[in-house]
Image: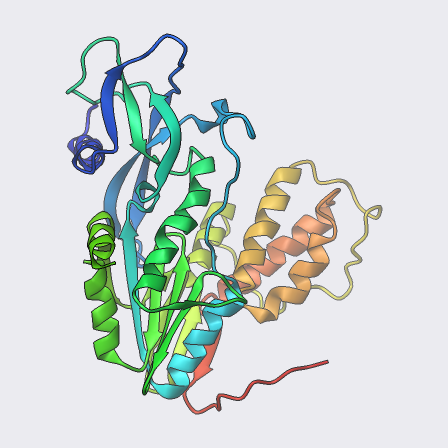
Length: 209
Length: 150
């Protein structure tokens, strides 16, 4: 690895996994196989074209898995385009707040139902020869089956902080109580908050932190 | 309940991005008169990837003399490039109702595009070059009425 920026990106990703206890290093038992993994590198740009950051993402070669055998269902929570336009136009007419949040490492927020073993990624130093990583929780969308449970995992949270899920678009959440009206729109790892009550928006933001 | 909430709060790591500015390739700009939503960056990327950034912009989207059909001209060999281009133009229609009809016309030939179709696509790109900042405007003076059309 020649460049410092990329090395830093890899280090950042690995420490995110380790601090969240996303895997433990074990010896592979006989009747199990480990799936391969690799690094994907990407340069993120801002809207004005300036480099925002260098990003390294660890992906599991999920294509080695077979539907119905290794996983059951895949799903990503995406909002419809019309649902995105509606809060925008309401915000414009009523002069509401328009805020944006971003969930770090979205795909790390689900629970894995079966054991998945992964070959140790290049760059991981704290591992001994012959050991593999046993994934504690899900590891990004390359393991496509895991994405499905993401919805199940994060949406009860919104409901627990007082939101109602819209029946017309499942990624839209509404919270209305005396005088305040907030909508929350989820697009995989992006969240848009639109509403007339600044305090309520701040409360929601706090409840995430 | 509060315990589980706490646990969830720990697992979620949120980055506060402040006011909505950039989302899914849409740029959102807020002014006194309303909210402007456009895909300028997406449009410019499209032009860069197609290598058309230096072309002369046109004011019209399509030539009314050119006939589009499966048979009339030579087949365009790089079918994947054509499909990719149309796909990206379709995403652009999210904030560009002006090009929807023309993209729809050209998307009928994804199976076997001809040189004429490709040229028509290039013309749309040239038009976009001349007007890359157009987008949807949500006026603050409009009324929150729900309208339905049958």
